[in-house]
Every structure is written in structure tokens, then in C-alpha cells.
Image (cartoon, rainbow, N blue to C red):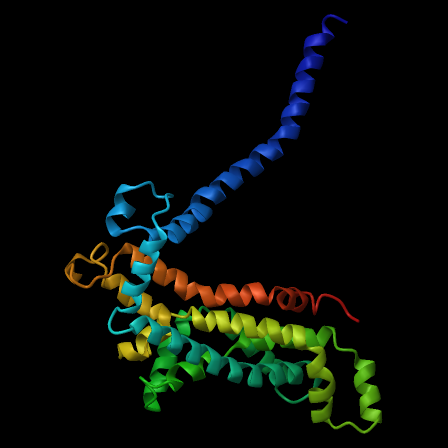
Length: 304
């Protein structure tokens, strides 16, 4: 018994270590997540409560004052005679207008690809998939040249029309109608005399509300956060969406651009508040649409 005691103890230690190892790995990952993702967000939320000097001198995670938040808010929305408000309204117009066109095109297109047979259907589906996986930056130059050819550069349509082209939405609707829409229900409706348009508008579309909500959310968020295309096609600051406006704020902040000068009244707290204001609409939309998003993600997971 004596010779086996140390080996038994070593075995028990190895067993305890093997059981504790997954918890150690998870703990390390959580610490890394905290350092690289959570702490910057906390700093961003606290920065508008301090002056530019306090941001540099004080504890990065310290809170300043509510009075300073009000001061920073006034300075931000006074920048260039209320440019921040114009940028937010422009983003709402571009994202909302393109969303309407996206739904008007993506939902019928996905329905047609899933439930109808026509020549070139497979080719059209392959083109949709290839376009969906292409990086958006690769399409910016041909889109710019096309918009320039039709003299749309600098207009509202130079953003609304390209934003409305959303192959991912077509593919999501295609998956839903191809996997979850009961064919027997459609057959019974045809026997009762429904036309193809009535099948789509009265049966398929009401059943597809979850996936339509999912397409609407992703489309709106993608359009709201788009930077590259608006930066190229909109030459006037009055027309900028908020994402391009943030870039202008960044270049007007002396801490990031010494050439800008110190008299523009844009400091790090104002820039941090502008970022918070820019992401707030998307955050609010996400909070109030979580149930729709979850049901939309699960819509095509199984046949009914």
C-alpha cells in the first residue's frame, strides 16, 4: 500500500487539474473580453462626463459630473450650426428610404426564387449568392461610375438606390419560403381560386413577418453604419450621414489632428458623445426587436 500512495495522490491531483483547466481557460477568456471589449465601452460612456483635461489626467474609469455632460452635449450640437442634427436626420432618410425599397424588392424576389420555376432561376440564384459573399468595397468603384453616368452623384438617390440592393435579404427570404412555407396550404388556396398575387400577399407574406423583420433590421443597421460609399458620393457636408460626419468630427479634433487648430471647440468628450449618439438608434432598435430577431433567425430552421 505504501508504494502506491504517492502515485494515487498524483493521479488525484491530475484529475483535479483536468477538471479545473476548463474553468481557468474560460476565466482567461472572460478577462481578455473585459480588457479588450468591455473596458473601452465603459470609458466611452464615461468620457463625456469629463473635460478634455480630465480625460487625460484622471482615472480613465472615473465619472466627472452631470453638468459636464450637458456642456459637452451643447458643444457637440452647436458644432457647425447644428451639423450633428443634420447628419442624424440624413442617416434616417437614407436608411429609412432604402429600407422601404429593400423590403419591396427582397421579399418578392426571395418568394419568386423559392416557389416559382422560370428560365434562368438557378443562374439568378447563383449570382445572388456570389454578390452576397463579395466584399462591399469591391462594388464601390463600379457603383460610383454607374451613378456618375446617370448624374446622381451628390443626390439622395446616390445612396438610397445602392443601399436598396441587398442580396443577403433576398437569400434570407428565399431560405424561409423554401423551407418553412407549407406547400399544402398554397395548394388548397389555389383550389379555392386564389391568384398568385393573392397567395403572396394574403398567405405567404403574413406568415413571413419574422424573416421580414430580420431583413429589415440587418438592412437598416448596415445602411446606418455604411461609411465608404457615402464618403465617396456626397461632396457636401450638409448631405453627410452620421458615420461620415463622425469622420469630420475626428479630423476637427486637435487631439487627433494637430493641423485642425484649437479653436474648433471639438475635444475628446464631444467626440465620445457623438459616437454614443450615432449608435443609440441602432441600440434602441435592437432592444425593441429582440423577439422578432430571434423568431426570424429560427424561422427557416425546420419544416412545418
